[in-house]
Length: 373
Ligand code: PLP
Image 1: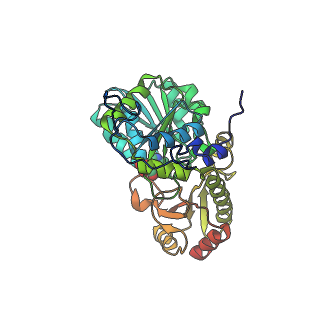
Image 2: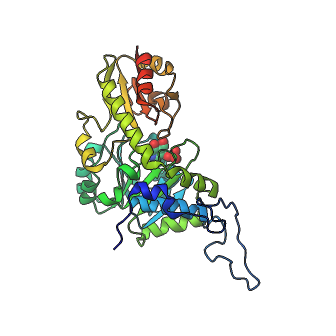
Image 3: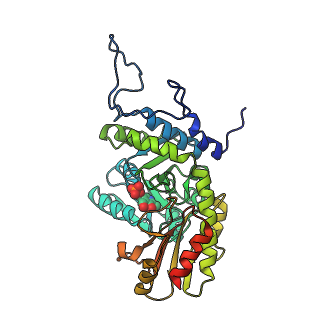
């Protein structure tokens, strides 16, 4: 048997995508929405009929992610939220969903609204209580986010899977398939906002789901709904994503190195009260991260500066290099004062969320030094 390729090789070669028609070593961009039939009314390419169903560029991007996840099937959506929504929409009315609390606020807000409309029983549980709740409470679906945004809590995927009979859906956006292959740890479906590090250039909005059980009823329902309801990623975004993913393993390596070095520097700074980062030994999620993440702990961290909301906003306003903008996982470093975005969720007023990019670490540390000073 042939030895499986390593992720860096799969990514660099875009899982073998070429343009055999021109001989190009990169795949062509094909924007057509509709595809030809011959004189006998047979499709020229039986797998291409209309781009709401599929397109070559979409298949190429999905093939890269499928290979990186070691999945059986992968579906791309026009955003991370569209991917999460696709799973919930496939649940029957009056189902039960256990959802980790303190996760990305956009997910929580949408899930609450949707579950109320569909009479789905929603049980929101803190990361630390997930395993006990899953063991005690039957559920159709369990949604976990690890590491979580912006608390950076980690959840043991295998332990959750062992505790529940429900479908385990893992939002692994902060880890990417490079640092954690959630399906290998027992997830039934792994989800990413590909808008973040998978694309990594802050220029594509996309989401993705992958599974090892493509025959499962829920997965088939998701697949059918995407095709019929049209929640599909456009070919240009898919082409850009395929291009960007060639460097995903390299980017994750550099971002994780930078984030760890910055986290250590900030922990030693007199103006910093705490740093939430799963790579730091004092972090509550460090042990799970060591078991579940390989090759680094990701680009996302949260910093609690000493003082008040005003102190945090003053520091945020002083950055020269870190851009003040939402999102994460891009090559350029970003900072965000999360309390301004979600003032009602218990986020500390002195918390600055940081997405660490691929810049030189000395420049990143120097920017924090002057901002905290
Ligand atoms: N999941 C996590 C962890 C996120 O951080 C985000 C966006 O910030 C999403 C899901 C939603 O993804 P998108 O913005 O691509 O819809």
